[in-house]
Image (cartoon, rainbow, N blue to C red; front, side, top):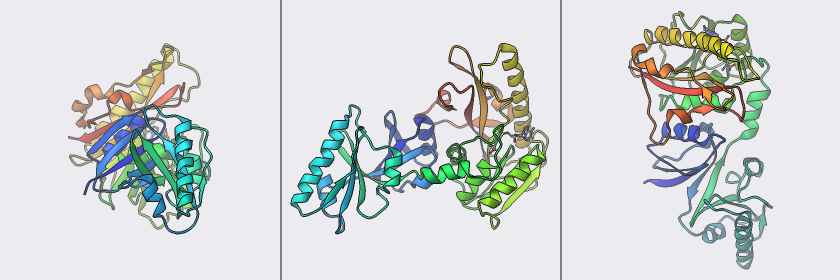
Length: 368
Ligand SMILES: C[S@@+](CC[C@H](N)C(=O)[O-])C[C@H]1O[C@@H](n2cnc3c(N)ncnc32)[C@H](O)[C@@H]1O
């Protein structure tokens, strides 16, 4: 039976939609940061890097749903994700429910909220949808949903900040984005082996292991391979199937069968200011030639249809636009097809904070 789910999306909603499309056929953006999913399979929050909250449609009214909860006090938050939402509606709906529930002998603690929606931090810290009688109801226009999963922001922050081997120059890939790259490879068998040919400090490999995959990490730098080893040991993953070795991605010979590739490639020199033309040109040439040679080398070593998902650099220009590598123009000659998404175009697949000079463009390829 198909059920109607709602995903509350992260900071870059279109990238989150692409991630959902990799798993579900029927995904539709209904609001800037809300996607509707029709699926027989229940989306799992811990598998989704780009989704903040996941909720299912209530089959009954919010009141009927809450009255039937198991005995005991109810903790309730209401978020209004309608197009024209207001903080007043959200809080007054919650208080209205509290009042009626009191008449049914149910005691309710309403989470105070000055905004239209509860923040992910509030929902997460109050274990809404996850602990008995701790509920967040979402209103979208006339429909009501109940949250059953909230992104574990504590665990992501720990995986990002508490790793023993970090390197500000290379290792700043957010774990959420690493997970998105892996998910964009699509549905893979559980024991699939994922290659990161630019593994750096191992963020992609770490997320792949947590998702249950075998991993293969290579990097030009011996120091980076040592960092990855330390970080993966810290993750207590010594029992998992891990292979690491130094190697130049442009000519390395990978000795294990590769089922999918997810990498953040070399992004060029770190930059905090918009680069002058000559600096931009040299960064583009350097990164572009590594990328091209890597794809050529890889295509000889993977089977047809193998997914290859890469984060590649794009640079901020003074007009606020990003200058991209344009690798997709010759992707056919390199032996790959570009994956298409229904509700997302290539220009949406640019991941960056406001004003960030080196952004990451995501490209999703399949070996021809
Ligand atoms: C942007 S970093 C990747 C960081 C990584 N996502 C992490 O979790 O730390 C790029 C990495 O590519 C490596 N690299 C640069 N040129 C390379 C090449 N030709 N072959 C393999 N690795 C290369 C660098 O040593 C660096 O670790």
